[in-house]
Image: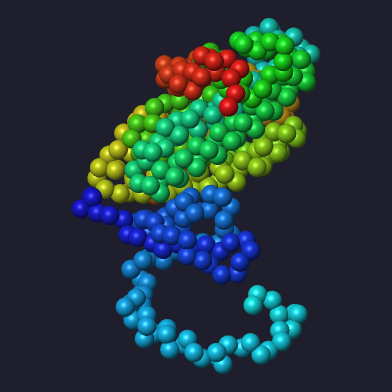
Length: 95
Length: 280
C-alpha cells in the first residue's frame, strides 16, 4: 500500500510566444496541485512557459496507430480542402 | 524602539559602525542562504522521486543565487570603504564574492544554526525549509523597505523565489503530517529535532540591532508574531502539535556554531583552500 506508485500526469505548457499549450512530457504526482508544482519545477526551469496545464494520463484517450491508414490516408488526395485560394488580410494574426 | 547595549558595541569605533554593521548584516543573510542551499544540494541525485529531487535542487540553486547577490554586495562594500578584512590567500587585489564564501572559517560564519543542521530524512528537510521559508518571506517583505537600495533590490528579487519555497514546503508539511502513520511520526520527530533552533531567528544580534536602528536591516523581533501565526496554521492543518518547549539554541549569528558547520565548510571550501586562487 505504501509503495503504491503515484499517478502519471501529462503536462502542457504555453510558451511566451505561443497561444496554445503544447505537450512537453509527463510526470508523477499525487494530485493536480502537486502535478502543477512538479511541472513548474521540471519543465519551466529555463523560462519555457507562462501557463501550465496538467491532466491525468488515464483521462487521455488516443487513436490507435494501427488505424492510421484508414483514418488519415483518405485526406491525402483532397487538395481542395485546403483554403489556399484566399488572400489573408493583414489584420489577421496567428494563422 | 531598539535598544543597543553599550557593552556589545564599545569595541567598535563610532564612525565605522554603519559599515561594520552593514557588512556583518549582509554576511549573515548571505551565509544563511548559502549554507541552506548547500544542505539542500546534498539531496541532488538522492531525492525520494525524480520530481522532488529537481524541486529541492531548484530551491538549493535559488538560495545559492541569493547568497551570491549578498556576497557580491558585501565585497563591494568592503572594497569601496577599504575595510581591513583579513582573508587568507588574498593579497594585493580586491575581495570577491568567492573569497567570502570559500575563505572564511567557522567562527566567521554568521548563518542561523537551523540551516546547518543535517538533512535527516525528507520530513526533516521539509520542516527545516518550511520554518526557514516562513521566516525568510517575512524578512524579505520588510527588507524591501530598507534604506539601503541594494538590499531592498535583492529582497524584492528574492521574495518571488521564497514565496514558492514557502508554498512548496507548506504543502509538504501538510501532506506528510496528515499522511500515513509513518510520515506523521517522522514529522513529529522532525519537530523534536528542529524546534529548538527557531528561537534564534527572532533573537537579534548586535549588528542586526544596529542595522535595524539605521533602517537598513529588519528588526527580527517584529517578525515572530506573523511567523507563529503561519506555523500554527500549517501545523494545525497537518494535524501536528505546535511544540511548547522553549527554543533556546542560538549563537550562529555571532559565529558560535554546532559541530556540523565545520564539516560543511571542509567539503565546500576544500578546493579553494587546497589550490588557492584557482579558477575554472
